[in-house]
Length: 296
Ligand code: NDP
Image 1: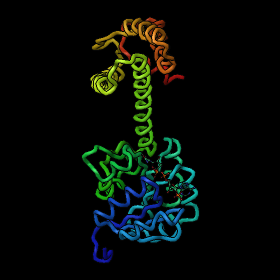
Image 2: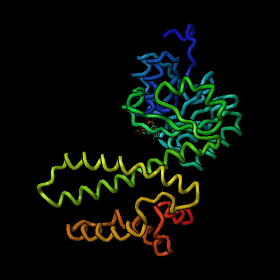
Image 3: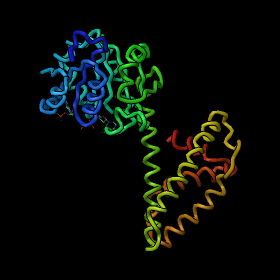
Image 4: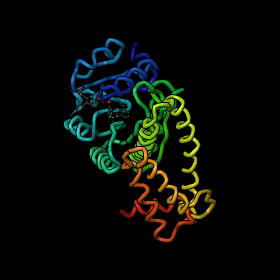
């Protein structure tokens, strides 16, 4: 690729781990001039053979950047380490390193104090999904919206994009909220398999299909909760009330006990449900349990 005759926006990428390497390949394939740096230089070699320009140091990479400087490093501490000693004034920094909302906000202030524009991202994909739009992978972005619009075309190359607000912490907040929900889902799946595995004649593959269909059907409850939280009326449109669900929890627990399965993945949420019922809200749906956590 002759970068002098290339009208595509040049990209500078710091961090060539599994995710960084996957991102790099999509920009190269799309014809973007790409400058790369990695702490362990060996990891840059295959990309250099594919057309990337290696930088010897982060300072050199950032100094030569005329397009976005993308960071895809292990954590926020490695971002701080890598950017210390670089001249950020006038640069466009896009941080795709997983962090907390507070870290993203602090990093945005830190970068802006040094004269940079800053966008934070949360990647909702694993490396094999990068550059494959049909997999549905995307990246949440938050922070400087003008910067996002300016580089949207570049950012859309590896995965879909979703801008979620000017607060730089919002990409991390959305990312972590989805991952947290996924953790709860995995807990449920784990308990369900532990239950059916107590019997020898349950076909696991068939059960897995039923489980995935059921979880898909129940996931629609998120919209109902959003509507109730918006209106403040947690009894609105309730199909299954909390008092009934709390009573059904006794059946879930008795079954776990009967099958000798530890119920510890279920009990924290069940406790929340019965706390809300004990407060006199048995006629509500699940939305009232949100506030019990938020005030913790
Ligand atoms: P890897 O562990 O494969 O790579 C980590 C990268 O960070 C390497 O380039 C490593 O350099 C670099 N690094 C670590 N510590 C430092 C440091 N102190 N100074 C400079 N560089 C450092 O991770 P991934 O590439 O998979 O992940 C990168 C980011 O993407 C993470 O924040 C991760 O949470 C996020 N992400 C990853 C996903 C995945 O499925 N892989 C999914 C969604 C987000 P070196 O090669 O020298 O060790």
